[in-house]
Length: 170
Image (cartoon, rainbow, N blue to C red; front, side, top):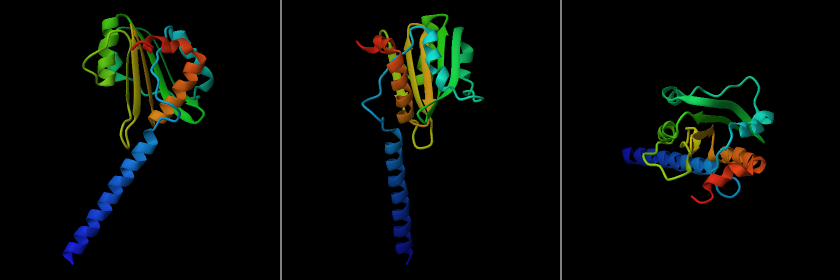
């Protein structure tokens, strides 16, 4: 009797674990092609998102950015074809500040020469995050899934194709 209860509990836990893994895979699978990396060359490129901005909704504040000298920033919540994400762009005073911020925001310890990009799925209940850096510019996009972030980026790269340029040779 005791053995049957243990086996039942084990089967239930295993089924829940497998269901969680399946949901995570489905939730975070990019929709079309692979995730592309890109970044704005001029912060004004982000004006593209104005038509997709969700009224009366601001992105969460970014405590990581408080420790750095930032020349200019833009932040907004956007909804692109049902994909709702927070888009934040920073232009740092120095490239070294941008690099330090990028490392903290992306959980990276080393940087490549030139452009850098990172994406994390966020797990079953976490938030997906996309961070790119080139020179003193950093782009951060967060959303429910990599699929949502991909949708937002695909629209942005369609409108601003030069955003892909820094990553072509990396």
